[in-house]
Length: 500
Image: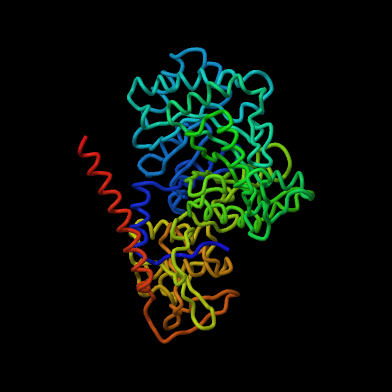
């Protein structure tokens, strides 16, 4: 489980090109319904360390916006349901909010979306009637400052907005929401904003374990469902839910609106009745999700369609009400240690070659620091490994066996490998913000012994720390071919633009 890591500068360049031209985005939801979370500035560093490029927040908290300034992380900012009434009533309220809560931090803080309201159809009363007027006022405020093309406006919805989701081809919106859905969809189509949906296969399995298989919910290939109307084969519930939304949109003749998954995930712990809420299942779901969407495989009804997703959630949130699972959706504990390993780098999620992770004859692998990483990124990763990562770094202290050579790459390599081995030598445990790489040569030297799974140390004759080696010719050829294609496409696009 988990993607294979690519030890290639060329592959990184390819993904840079992909990010420039197109590409699926995988982000994380940063909820703060807890009383034990790290400060926003520490959270911003944690996000960068794990190479997370996209983050959703549920309000416009000033400390959070400040913390993400100059990080390059793109933020989705929320307007809370409690603000829908004042936002829908008076344009001046929105203008003031934008002036005081957004503009002072933009563009240092990269805000790309504003979500107006969240799952309003799940709230008693007529709150949904306030959403579109509030969205219109937010758009007007953005137009006044010339940001309406750079910051998209939308709203998030639960799958409950549909009256029917199975089979996918029969997907339909609940007619009781028609009064607000029609103007909402017209707004999204006119402004090229996505329809944002929160999808949770976990709940479908938990509530109907006799009708939904666990493999089907976890993207495991052993289970499939056939849509009787279209004959399309579904190997996972996520795709089926997405396509049910596609068909619901098409039924109302909104064929150009893109879908974005604003929340999805799997809890790592639950009450005694929630037997599927385990770290293994959470890791399986989220890892398979990332690989699935980044490969741009699309869905049976929309093959090759790009789909942006946000994983819920960054931290376990101890103040959330409900069953035990509600407080255990996090990728990290409040002390910033990982609940389980998960890779957000495209290198780890996309399987471009078959030779990326070469192992020694007996299958042993080690994780070391790449010499291509910047000093700042290496230092941040080393600090995390020796801190929240719970690695014993005493061996790289002065006068200890692994202190010499006294350089950052050597010290980081020892710490990275210790974390990697302590976490089962799982590929995703050697990420460290793309500064860690896997090798098949024992990096131990002299009396500095690098551990392996189970804490067994091996001794090697070499007295230098192994550094990343070159890739196979197959990888180089693949990179050259693919990157050339995207580079030519980019240059062609720029040349067309230049004619206007």
